[in-house]
Image (cartoon, rainbow, N blue to C red; front, side, top):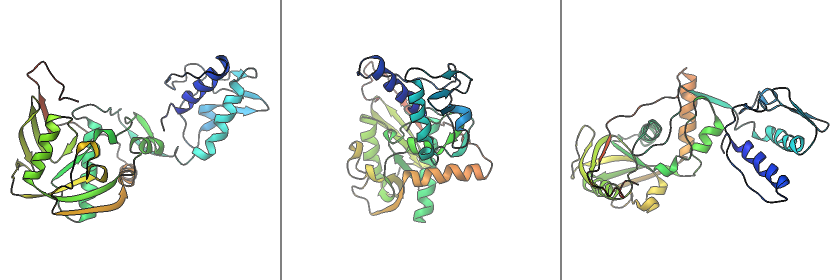
Length: 284
């Protein structure tokens, strides 16, 4: 559920009226430039979205609307706010926007590193390597106030967190497939991909050892073919926990806030992709 959801709905409703029943819409940033309306939390609806009474809508900037479809649209949106109150709870603060970017970004690194830590705590065993998919991160981290809605929208899928034990040779096969197709979100090591081939891999501070058994954190979607990844193949141990991704990430955000810490992260040298050819089709 996006912060711009309400303006999208407004766009659909207004278009339906103006176009004789046809539907069209566009996304508009809620910057308050026209009526003062901005994204609200559960406790500042009147200040951010305005008020409605007896067929009249009063916008946050003082503009009054009594004609046309605007008051009715406003009424629908304002009456929906109590049901949305839980999702609009303020859960954290981000020092800057974290945008999804390939092959790594602050957001993807933040996600997989937190997932690895949570899986390690849940399994009671060392996690050396983590892998999840970019497609599991559905929206960017906003700058400033972060609502529960933002985190729910970011991780909406009911994928369980999992702990596996895999030999280095099996991890290598997975990494080679990623290098040749679509690289994903990784943690716990350093990897170099050159022209669609895995050139080097380091996990737990040392070159990937084909004979060593590593503790691995992942999600249930990737166990048996999600995004053409088969993490469970040849696993000597597999634990699938009841917790979904959101059950891990939302408490993590709340714990940062409880400690007075903001949401922020970094990129590093965990993945380097080198393309010396004109054809970059492997960089998906």
